[in-house]
Amino acid sequence: MAKTKVAIFDLTGCEGCQFHLFSLDELLFDFFQDFEITNWRLLSEKERADFDVAIIEGAATTKDDINLLKKIRETSKIVVAIGACAITGNIFAQLPKERRKKIAEKIYDKNYKLKAEFLEPVENFIKVDAKVPGCPPDLEIFKKILALLKKEKIFSKIKKVAPPDFTAKIEGHGVLKINFKEKLAAFEVEESERLVEGLLIKKDFLQAPFIASRICGICPIAHNLCSWAALEDALRVEPSQETIILRKMLLASQIIKSHLLHLFFLVLPDYAKMKSSISLSKKYPAEFHLMLNLKRTADEIMKWVGGSSAFPTNTMLGGFKKPPSRDKLFSIRDSIFEVLDEAQDLINLFSTFETPNLRVNTRLAALTSSEKSYPLYPGAFPEELRELIIKNSTAKLGVSKEGEVIKVGSLARLSCASKLLNPKAKAAFLKFQPDFSNPFYNNLAQAIEILHFLEETANLIEEISKKSLEGSRGIEKITLPKKTATGSAYLEAPRGILFHKSEINPQGKIIDYNIIPPTQINLASLQKEMQELVKFSKSKKQFRQLIRAFDPCITCAVH
Image (cartoon, rainbow, N blue to C red; front, side, top):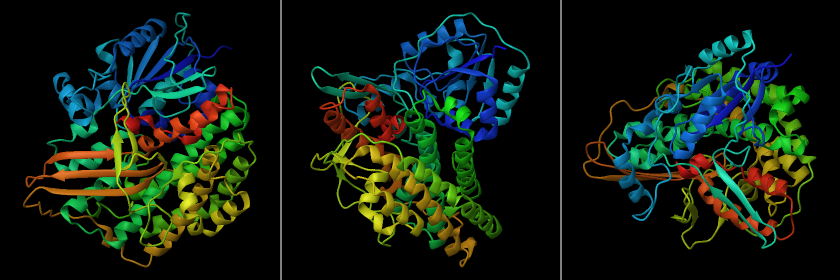
């Protein structure tokens, strides 16, 4: 019996709505089984597709978006808008069209031409039949919509729609361009601007961490914590040791989850010679459930420490609104011990894959820690980073002060601090020895880090169990600066070094804000290393694999 065909489209947003669907857990497997998924760029290769139901994430920002929406509406019997960006434009719609250009001139330069001249909800352009509100979207409402769709087959016009030519199975929008004859390769960013740094201006400083977390749906905790740390530096607030421990735990859970979803959904299909992780989950249900078991553990940490398995709600200046209970932390530790073997299995799996023989000499960089522990939080970087504006690109590039291209992330952290890995992860590292000069080994490095950060979280729970959790409560009474105050912070996000810098006036309003995410840094090294690959490879698949090995988050890079 033919199934209802479903297509998922992503416009401009943080992609958190799509990643939040993975929190359906076992029901996600049912979703794959009950419907025929004909388009989902995040999980499968692009192809022309017809569909009966369209699910749309993100806001419309270009005329191309409007044209695509009209084609989707013409083809689809039912259109579902999912998440605040698709339904209202979210906080990003607060910037009127006339202010966007002025803010872009400040963030980029006076000659910069905006890709996104507007940012508006889907319903401004086409009729929407159902909505799943929230940021993140309400999964209970989504489940009810799926239940209704499942009751009877839905028929629509048989008309195929060609989705945008963006590289599949990465976060955000970019296009791979290769000229094999001239031996030239490029990855061009096509993501629309949301102008978060400009959106923060004149806002109360306490809003910054929660707005910044909307930059990215897969690493919101990293942005949230880095923002708090920059604000604390400006206000001379010293977080307690209990706060630091819980923040480390929260950030570790973010890295575990990010690596896990990247490896299973975006990378593994290539090595299994399959077009999508949808097909992969059906053919290899055991591996799918292995991933779910590990993800559930990370979700539990995020929920009980951060307040949510998506965007954190429990963090505040100097600490947390409500510390987790000791019993809950011990329960999390027990669940970690139960999945350590599965994390080891994941490393074993990625160690078996044949890796293209690419060697490059890009400098690998990671934060240093005064505690002589594996790079995480807090951290310091002994040199200055600067941003380069690239013509016709919405993403700046991050380089060293001298303009040197560097690379950050899992492979870089291992190269700088493998001696500081926890015992089981160190044993796996010594056994499989990732090649630091080969960027494809970043996948294996991520698998090793999953095991390390599981062990680290168990250690952190043991450490904080000897302290009073009440010591992690945040600061209710805040003393504002008598004059303009500036603060900055570094931490290790899943993809590497993340930097936030804030400037606050005596009224507690933000007057300047700057963010350098790891993908801005890695886009420069990706370009360099693609040029090395094109010297001997004529396989487009290998170039796509290289892009995915970098695990780029284009939404972060543009923000």
